[in-house]
Length: 372
Ligand SMILES: [Zn+2]
Image 1: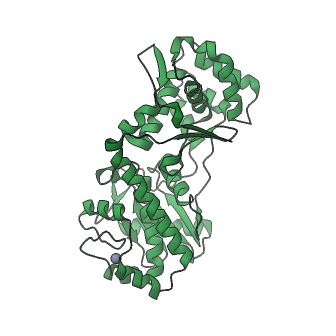
Image 2 (image 1 turned 90 degrees about the vertical axis):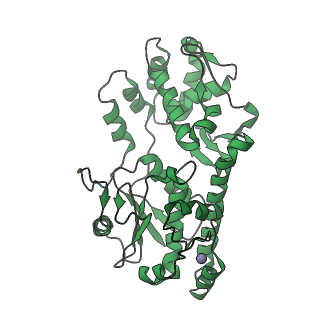
Image 3 (image 1 turned 135 degrees about the horizontal axis):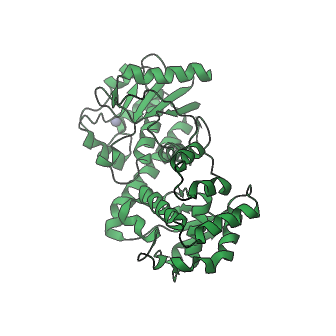
């Protein structure tokens, strides 16, 4: 079963690909397609990006990290009609010659009338999911509530022959079932925390002969989502950080206790991060050049495409006393951890220390796991 995920321009790379990666983290009956795979920048590209005071900085970064997105409108409209939203799906179908058996799901930062989380096209297998404001209802990362919407509407599509039939079966009073209508949007929290299918709805699932593989995948993903939300909610109480996994030849970072959540650092960010991870005692920023050789070795592992000269150039820029390249990388690393984990939990993973002084990562190193 093919599912095409598309987005409006305001849905950023991090969220869009995080949702897609999470949906694919459990093998299942669906093939998820995104317009293009995200690509890591080369170190050569990063060097151009980190040149201080370069006005092309922002633009270049976008050019490197973004693939084609659907630019529906440059007007500052914040809500669109359902028809306008499905029109984006319909155009995508025509442009990409997508079979009518396939499902198209639009992730959109635009609101809609009458302000629903998701919408269903009566004419075709098209859906939209609103990606904004989840932080008002749930803790942490919005990839989970959005992924929840994706899998539950895929299942609903098999349980009912038409959206109108489905709408007739929703529960007006929330009971922690996938079919809760959640007229009061705050009720979505109950639905996500229980992440369940009630006995009445299970009967429909059986009656409709929904394939086992679909059900198994849906429930496994629901379980993962529930674990994620509870982990974050309980962090305040338990104060137990996730382990940090450093994996493979080019040392990608994951959080295994958060369902192998990937931390998407660029090659240079990753090299800087690993250097500080190797030195729990901390490194004074002004002495970074003492670690030049180690940094060059780390950078060399990050990208197979870059030649040694480029890597040395990148390291020299990081070590140059008046360059802001290093602090820029550290603040980007911080932002990425905060986006994933929230301020409080992210704190242990960030490189921090007094201005101009010794910087370090607080995470207890027993929580760092290496895997080849
Ligand atoms: Zn139900």
